[in-house]
Length: 128
Image (cartoon, rainbow, N blue to C red; front, top):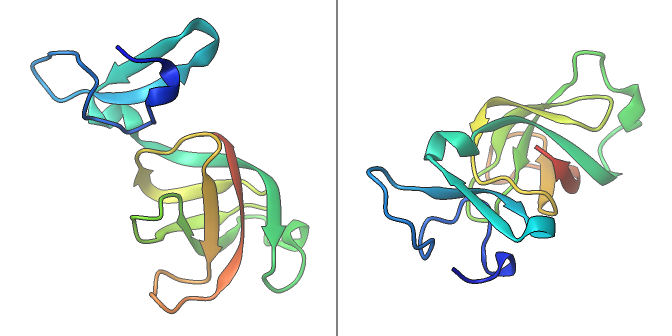
């Protein structure tokens, strides 16, 4: 098995572990040089915490409604934005589970899932 740096969350190929069902990288523990694998269902997250949030939408992010602002959020450049709520704390709560989310990735907020949607801001994932 190669070093931890050679793996990404959600990776399936090149893990080098045989199992009855496909395994994916679900976590990386660099401090202990461990790659944690599990079934695809282990990748599902419904909430993210962000850092360095950049808000270019209307008003102030801390002035959002208490229940959150309906948005679309993209956590992978190869996937379309998914319906979510942007909470006043800067956290994202997805309507359905998202997979392959990893700390350090960017998360971009849009005003809808439409391909011509307006960008409202973004931040970097610190925890999922």
